[in-house]
Each structure stands twice: as structure tokens, then as C-alpha cells.
Amino acid sequence: MSLLEIVVLALIQGLTEFLPISSSAHLILPSQLLGWQDQGLAFDLILNIGTLAAVLIYFRVEVVNMSVAWVGSLRGQGKTQDSRLAWWIIWSTIPAAVVGFFGKSLVETYLRSGYVIAVTTVIFGLLLWWADAQAKQIKTEYQTGLKGAILIGFAQVLALIPGTSRSGITITAGLMLGLTRSGAARFSFLMSIPIIGMASSYDLLKLILSDEYVDWSALYLGAGISFASALLCIHGFLLLLNKVGMMPFVIYRLLLGGALFYILAMN
Image (cartoon, rainbow, N blue to C red):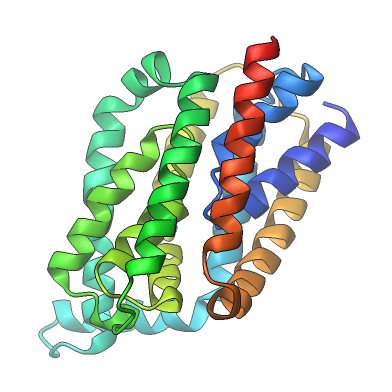
């Protein structure tokens, strides 16, 4: 991989993992426009680890509080808002984990096409606009509730379809359930921790069992860039969210979807 490929792909991963604009829609662009080859399993793994480290560090206080409270709830020390949130995050992860384990190969075989990505980029962008426009915004992430968490978890299953955007569809579901923009985004980011962790573990196992060559210098650089860009992205997104709303991301998705349709039609 060239230096340009490493930098561009790491930035795409770091920025699009947490913005509601679809990482898969962006990852198709370098290959379509520049003819870049697949970056390999090891590079995918290290980029995921970089984004996982970013969300863990940004939400380190919440993660520690939730972990301590969750262990306390197992020991019969009573329930707190942190232990409830921890349990909701766990329950919200189960649908995507189960469907992803059994259906990932089907998705990659039948749905990983440029036209599917273009269509879902537009459709779920419009759904995000509708949810934001209709949102009551009366609850924080600590008021999500078990039923709400499970519903957001089922929404996350849709992110297995390329172009949907994991953060986009979970934030959309959160808004539809009455969460504030900030509450929906924070719940989405927190629930990304176990799902990214499981995906990274799965990729690590595949890498161990494969004979793929590993370029360690490329991995270190990619991890650093994806970590830094993801950390800045999370901070900036939460800082600006209540000021700008979801409309800029909706417009961007519509333009991106149109660009993908044009590129695919020209090829």
C-alpha cells in the first residue's frame, strides 16, 4: 500500500465510523475512482482497533462507571442509572451480533454492490431527515429503557446492509424513540464499543488463521490516523450536533448517493 492509500483509508474509517454518512459508501469511492485494490484483512483490523480505542478513551468515564455499576448489579448491590445503561447496551448489541454471525456471508454475497450502497445511502439519509424533523427530544441516553435499547439494537441490524451507516441508523432509531440528538448519538457511540470489539476479535481470529503478509509500518500509521481522526470526529460531532442538527448530513448523503449512481452508471 502507498502512503496516500494508508492515509486516505484510515481517515475514511476514522471519520465515517461515527458520522451518520456510511463508511461503506465512502470506501467504495477509492476503488471506483482510483482503482485501488483491497487493503487486506490486517489493515481493516487495525483501523477498527484505532476507532475502538478512540471511543473508549472519549467515553472513558462513562465506560468505567458503567462497568463498575454493572459488576455491582451482578453482585446484588442494586441498580443505578449506570448499571441500567450498561445492561441496555448489552441487550442492544445482541440482535446485530446474532444476525451478523449467521448472515454476514449472505450480506457480502448478495448485497455488497455499488447500487445497493447508493440506494441505501439515499433511503436511510431521508429516513434520518424524517426522524430528526419529527423527534420529540425529551429523553437522555439514561432514559432509553430496555424496550428502547432492544429496538435500537434491531435497527443496528440494518447496518449490516452496506450503505446504511451503523451510527446513522441507530441515531435515527434513537430520535424516533424520543431521545435528544445528543442522547441518541451518545447511546449510538456507546453501543459501538461491543460491536466493534466483537468484529475486531472476529477479524483477528481470521488473521491468525490466514497466511496474509503484514506490513507493520502501514498498520501503525493507519491505526494512529484512524484513532486521531475518530477522536476528533466524536468530539466535533457531539459539539455541533445540537447547533446544526442532522440536515447537513442528510444533504451530504443525498449528494453522495447521487455521485455513486453517476460513477456506477459511467463505468
